[in-house]
Length: 334
Image 1 (cartoon, rainbow, N blue to C red):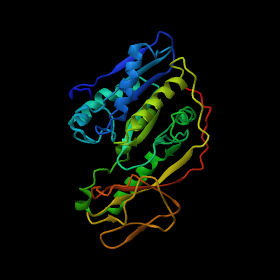
Image 2: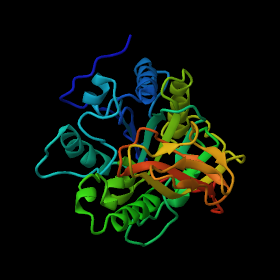
Image 3: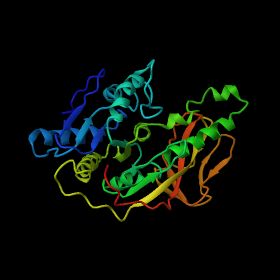
Image 4: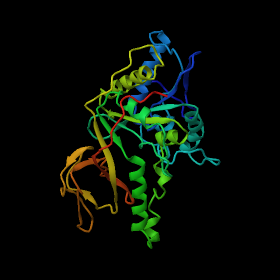
């Protein structure tokens, strides 16, 4: 039987060892219809309560339902997308602003975030990681080795990078396209690269590292198991529990998001039904604009997050290629 979660508070479960160690936080249901993380967290909490699992050092915090209003409604959002433009607000105006004012300080208290999600279309689970170490202005980062080492031990073989940089490029293209067209620009919800900041990006901005794990399709009965295994592997890898640390996968597939294409008109359409990470060949037709312009794959690669119901002015689909980045399987846990 599914537990009830009040919509006006966050239920936060914390376990603190008396011995020092990393500080981990695990989130479920940042999007209310993505419940695999909730089920997995509830299962792990039962194991801690029963004494079959014990925190030996450091601490772990679990938030089974991060957006209770969306969860109660069984939908992605309460009033807006919690996983966009995530930051504290001096004057909160909606449900997600109020959650952010509790969630952001909570994230900042931790070293590592595992954020558990699922997706709409069929497909295999994948992990999303941040950038290599850098001192740039968009997403400066200093823990890439530790982050990728964890990603290689969560279970799924597919790993994806490039989110925030690709999102920021999409914002630039969106604004250039609507230059001089104020009536069209008013339809755009996403005109600031900061709108691409969600839980993992905020965590990195506060000095930690973070992984979004997409555990499978929303209704896939195996998705909660993928989430559960990822939690257990994370606890062992970080040595929060006295269990054998998992080995890193050596058969992983690393992809990089490189482009995002917006939907411009309600009559823009895909030429077929696409699944996320479905392969594309260079020049293959993906969609057709309302004016008849055909959109083709710029190279061999993959279509990602295709949304046939995207609102005009917002992301329609992403394009990814295989990445040449080398991942460090031996990065030290923080």
